[in-house]
Image (cartoon, rainbow, N blue to C red; front, side):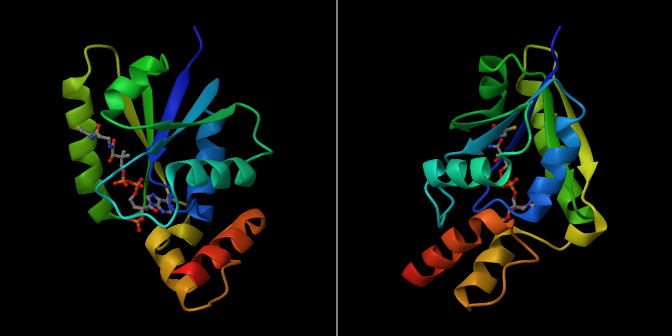
Length: 162
Ligand code: COA
């Protein structure tokens, strides 16, 4: 049986921290689905479709990955994709509290075999978040350390529209 994992998130935009988790977790499963949440209650810079495109541009070199949009419950998205492994990155102790809630909530909701695995962020990206990227971009700062080269221009252009 194929192992299918889902790495869910907002990815507004995808950062080098996300790429680090994606590349490492793609080695653990046969197929990795990146689930881009269409979250109406989070004010995003990019539409879900744009976030999907930015991810596809960034990870074009990794074979076993598919990027999909989702809304509603993560467990339903998992089931639709025949996936039973949720992948989440952990950066800090404060991440852990929220992540534990999500993991236990998802496990309780699922009426199928489901596990969450946590991948520790690499030390270079422990501090990184999409909000930091948006803040640096909105002040015209250099994005090279935070974003893959393929999407820097897209993020700079969006910052100018804000
Ligand atoms: N590198 C860089 N940044 C990272 C990161 C990493 N490795 N891991 C997390 N982040 C950042 C994100 O960039 C984001 O930053 P921002 O808030 O500054 O924009 C922040 O951490 C939040 O991460 P994200 O993974 O996007 O989480 P989220 O809280 O937006 O979404 C879902 C988490 C999608 C897993 C969750 O909301 C979900 O499953 N929703 C569907 C409804 C549902 O089923 N809920 C659970 C019920 S039990």
